[in-house]
Length: 144
Ligand SMILES: CC(C)(COP(=O)(O)OP(=O)(O)OC[C@H]1O[C@@H](n2cnc3c(N)ncnc32)[C@H](O)[C@@H]1OP(=O)(O)O)[C@@H](O)C(=O)NCCC(=O)NCCS
Image 1 (cartoon, rainbow, N blue to C red):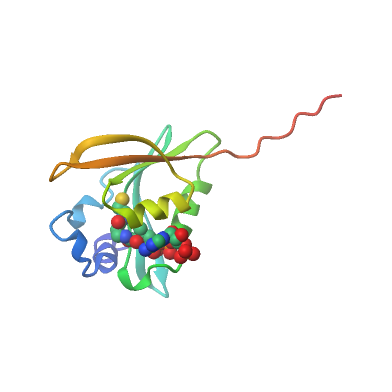
Image 2 (cartoon, rainbow, N blue to C red):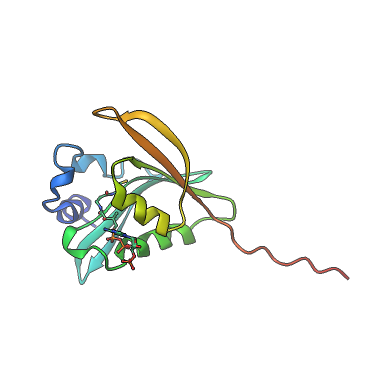
């Protein structure tokens, strides 16, 4: 997989990301850093980059190409991450408080707010910290 080509393709001309992040910010640097793509045919149209930890997954960044949004693509990638977790593990992430679309997306995916990081982003913008906890059904106890 050509990570750089895939990431550039997905980022496309997203104005909102210009100057904020570079491709290298998303590239897996170490073994525990991963990137998951969704494809339209063989064209990468969405990705999520993340780090695996003992507690679960820290999402670094995620985005869907503007033309392919509202098609359930990011939801599909998040489902894959959720399925990879064990009971009690969590997905952690943070976002700009002004990013209401992403907030709506995460709420739809069952994420809850766990904190705020004041002035975390440039321009004194607060970060909202969210998490989702894996709660697999446990085997029912059988009382004899
Ligand atoms: C947030 C983002 C990744 C969502 O990707 P997506 O592939 O369009 O999301 P999905 O199609 O899987 O959306 C699943 C659900 O989330 C909610 N949702 C997604 N986009 C929404 C929007 N613009 N307005 C309201 N609800 C939205 C909806 O409930 C949607 O289900 P529905 O379409 O059946 O109503 C995308 O908008 C994006 O790339 N934004 C710019 C980058 C960004 O802000 N990344 C997050 C940084 S932390």
